[in-house]
Length: 360
Ligand code: TRP
Image (cartoon, protein in one colour):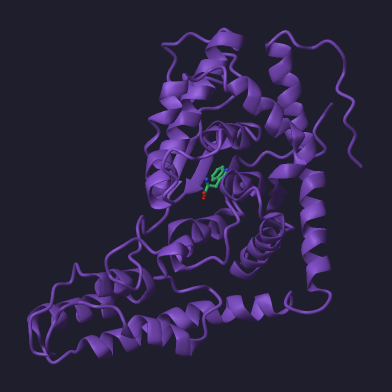
């Protein structure tokens, strides 16, 4: 089987688990990077809808809804389906097959030590009741990535532990089944005969954006998020709640506080940022309220074009358009994924019959 394109741009794969609407933390942590990279790279953006089942297996309606919602958010953010490929995880059987084989290349205890899994178990209060499939998703994520053989994986800081595991699995596969010497430098694995490049994580401009509680990372479940769909009024109100502990506009302020993390994340005029920092640090007649209003304006300016683009899909025919994008993505992603699987099975001496899955 040959791929349908002769794509020569380097490849990127990244994705999100559909859990609800995207917020500003997603934007500065990862989505902004994706939109910026789609011209230069051959991009695959994956909706990890199977992962949503690891903690919500009894909520298929909700998962379907958030799946469509996240694609809508991506398009609103400027992901262009003519440039990038939207991949619906559950429609790519090669991901599931590779996950099974990869599960044999990584020790069980190594998976359970993955700090991102541990954090999630705590944050979601899963205790020891989580499903077998829950930790398995981390192995599945290795397959999500490697099936597209990307060089780069743009992610938020919280995903770096998963990328590290992916790199271990890629090295191991290349060593065990492609005969690559374990001393090989990461960058040289493919030249040395390996099937999988060792992908690198690329963390967004702002690794961790605090939520409007001023303390925790922005997160839907912590109720401290500004959503990409929030109106200027909502943005203003939510920022108004951001607590800094500062008393008055003449009191010297701490420019490492959460408000100034927003200033640096969303005000793009460097000179203005420096001026605000200067005056705030000195307590030079500048109140939190003023800074908040400026940040709110910058954020609403960022969100306005996203909300305009989104409006097109919030119409009666909008859902069909989203499904069309998903179908087109499946058609583009399948040959790439199938080719990787075919080569992986060949390396594993599993090439008994030609692959018969067909795709139009
Ligand atoms: N685990 C990621 C999240 O919760 C989503 C994800 C699934 C992903 N597969 C991926 C991210 C592959 C990057 C690459 O956000």
